[in-house]
Image 1: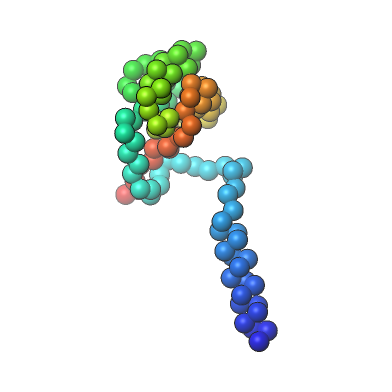
Image 2: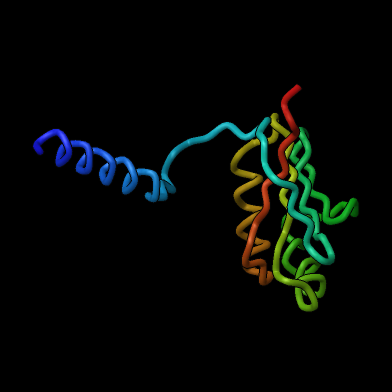
Length: 116
């Protein structure tokens, strides 16, 4: 009887740990396996290794990013695909995402390449 109770306790503990979202972990996102998400009208925010920012292949500065994204996000599902180069500085990527959030983006999809 104790064995059954211990098994149930361990099962519930593991199940509760798997349901927890940990938002404070540092992660490396250059590769990954994920189901492809296809929004209706994709808006892509690209940050290159030289920290240059592009919106749908159009170059834009960080200062003009909000003004560029607002009209695009008005008729969209408010999702933005973030394609950041692995060598891009994290601060630039975060500032670009914060500007996109200020423009009205509600969801971010992180683009990764499939491992070989």
